[in-house]
Image 1 (cartoon, one colour):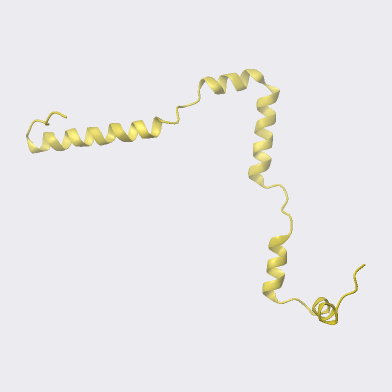
Image 2 (cartoon, rainbow, N blue to C red):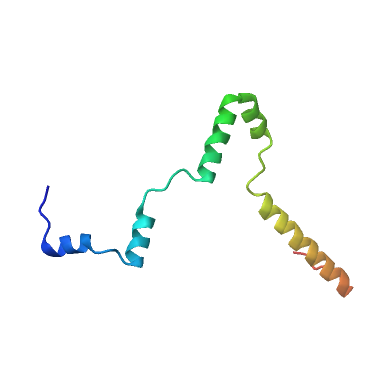
Length: 92
């Protein structure tokens, strides 16, 4: 064991301030969170039932779905705007 200096020994003996206690509480290792537990349970469920994993894979949505939907909505809004003006839409 390494001998403590007088200042270090005094610091250990003093009650900690609120900030020091808060920092120590934040530095403590965290347990398993609800999100982590749920993820582990879901992975175990999918691993136990391969047919479920296959079915889920067939129903996976494309990552571009949101972008495609937004593009469609923008084009539809533009078409409505041109129709409201009473003018034909210019060719692209």
